Amino acid sequence: MVHPRKRSRKRLITSDSDDDDDYTDKDYSIEEDTSKQLVLYDPQTTRRQQREFQLDEPIYDSTPLQQIPPKTKYGGHSRVLPSIGHYTVQCAQCFKWRVVPTKEKYEELRETISEELFVCARAREWNRVLSCDDPEDMSQDGSRVWAIDKPNIAQTPVGWNREVRIRGEGCSKFADVYYTSPAGTTLRSMVEIERYLAENPFYVRQGVYLGQFSFATPKPLQEDYVRKRKYSATTRELPDILEPVEGVNI
Image (tube, rainbow, N blue to C red; front, side, top):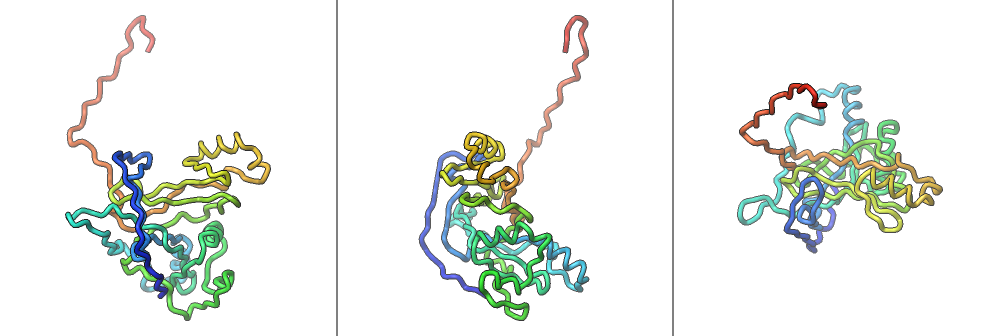
């Protein structure tokens, strides 16, 4: 297993507001400690492969990972968030986890993961000699926060940056996705992307188009990471259906 070096430097961001529909600085903080970092992976293809191979013991079971979030001294959950420390992919033959060295390579693999299955030998694409006989790089041992990524997301256009920012535990959303243009403009939705490309057509002339953008977010394997919305115990009575009144258009 790869044991990355830990760094103790922390950067915390706080704010007085907390809006679950739009992010607030309070929802984000970063701890550069790889023992609590997010691991993104795509299980869709390997699940299909497992069915085809008819394994006696499936790799995935119905129980969630035993991921215990950090606690505060008062007993509540910490607002310190995991950063994305590792990008991984699972071999379709041996089902071992392999660390992808760069975000760019990970995005390349993710874009075509359903058509081009990943096997250990493909590690030669980043100059690594690897086979299914080698030990796995990382295991789901509960020491990290794991999240399922969406497959087949298009690679980020050249010069742009796609960022996944993880919210604090207990928020109504797990993460938010942002794109940053080469000019440094941050965009949070497809509506903003479409408007920005219309206002800056030279990007379109460079080959940038809407299909290269996706705001799909990963899903945490820790089931209680995201807060479920609570509804009032008392159900409000619905108003009576209005009957048409003569001489009044409804």
